[in-house]
Image (tube, rainbow over the protein chains, first blue to last red):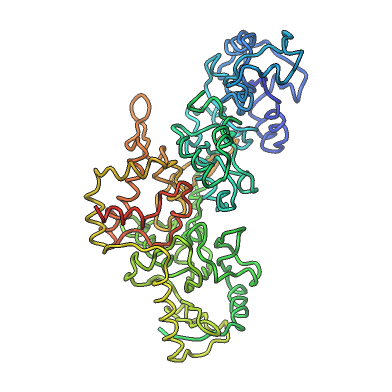
Length: 249
Length: 340
């Protein structure tokens, strides 16, 4: 069987998901028996303008100027996978979306320079048709391999859980952050990561996005009453990774 | 059944004797909570625990359990029972195990569960400290204890130990047991009675009243009222000692030719539990969180109540504690329904 030609592209992001993949070691090397990377900025110098089987796109769509480049990738790719929080939901970049003075806040007197011009941070699907999304900051390596394995071997439906992180915390018998007097966004956060953060004593920040129909009102209440967060923090907590999923987005 | 006495000083030597013969799974501390885990050192044993995050069911049926391993030539079963000891299960958890045994063997015999279950020797222990949400004194309190091999009750100076089965009796050789005196047997009975009486939460109503009232409350507005704060997070399901639903999935290796089939504990409070494929997409037969919330109580308090002759609940209180929104407490909810 011919190897599947894959290319990795990045938009507004830290490229950490590419790094995450190269750090994975053996499973990624094993995957290379089935896929042929033809463009991968963090690991090779070659680039391609040829048709590709699978395009992996990292980063959010935050400049209208990037639309043409995304369309050009879509035109020559058989399958488009948006991977990582930025590409799947806008991610941490969307923190700016509810403000209009972010450029001044960050760049001061340089704010008006043309190369710093950006609009709302949106998922890649806001610009082009996306076939699969792999959420997470960074994306989960094992999930990435699982999705790619299914694409390579011809499965059209890829399963990613739709339930919240609490399910995975309970399955691995993690002490609830709230039982430790902490706060956590687990009840409204999309699972699939295996809930590693609460197991390490760190609250879930919903880096994979929110579940469908999240109970945001109850979350705000629990953050205040059980998590002891001040009113404003409880309200803003979910902007970190899920600004575009909030009811007020 | 024979009754023995094991002094406090001789407990460690007995447990070490067990550990030299079997893997021993027992309550140990985990941060602010307790969990059942394999004892590495006898000093980790915490028979004074209040409750564990997950019920002891996980000892026979882990939250993720491999079912088969496959490759292009065929498949092999993952069933591989190892003899083990579950030490320190509270009386209500033993009732929960007995209910699970019915669910996994009555209508369909589930050997992935039953093989491990049969290979497990269960030594129960009395409740020394109450979990703040426990109400086992008023939930299935009259249900007899079955399925365990021995039971240890903490009394003055040591433990009154009942050897219930032959297997349980055979363990006596591993420790410095004496025959229990009549006073020690009576003291043990009183300790267990008092543990029920001292439960911090109380449930009203008999099994039949609960079954009737809950079933008739199907259209009550009470479900939506409680569910207003529900996250549909499934925590109440996953920590439940009588929930038995699971989801089966296949995991393929990168070669696309081999892999394994496994099952995961599932949760009917989550949206995907009731989502089914339908022409052109999918459909959810319990779309509202209120419907899913109600379903859990209908199952536990009405439907399974008929099969078991009592609610599928042991009053352990784990769901109440696991619910961050504080709406899962069966004592609160059922009592409210009974008042209507």
